[in-house]
Image 1 (cartoon, rainbow, N blue to C red):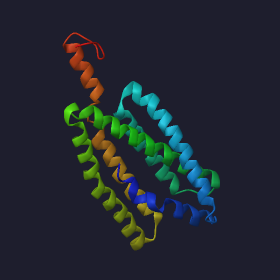
Image 2: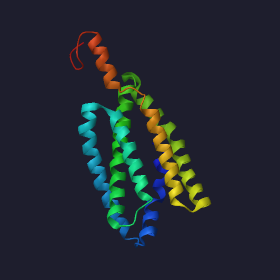
Image 3: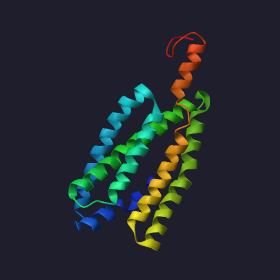
Image 4: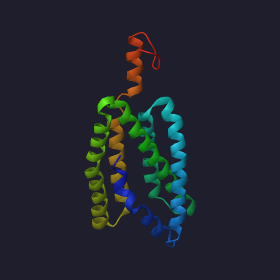
Length: 186
């Protein structure tokens, strides 16, 4: 989901310029994003506990695509605040979902090593995404093009994610094959 970093560094600037708002409007945008983060964390806890991390990651990508589409038509304060709220929701749905999937997929003995490697591998792609956004805006001056590229990147990550099996369903299938349900003593 690093595609969000194509658009994210420039989102607040785009909204301030589009709405003609003073810099002080950033405080409301950040507050809205934080409220979205709280909502995303609560939703992650509820949904992730019951159905796992993959569904959180899928929801995060769908929410991000919606908010990125909304950036192209932003014209009111309320819509701007909604965009930042959705950004907070999608960001935290993805973070919790990604960590959950990582924990459930990595072998227990090597979990710290695997999770560290996953985080380290992610860094160049985050930087590349931000660089892509910078170059796109510099060359075109059009935030809508940056949004479209971001949408394509996030949608591609969703298409890659969909066929990956939910680790909890794999564990449940293994448990049923051995004659006991997940959570019962082995």
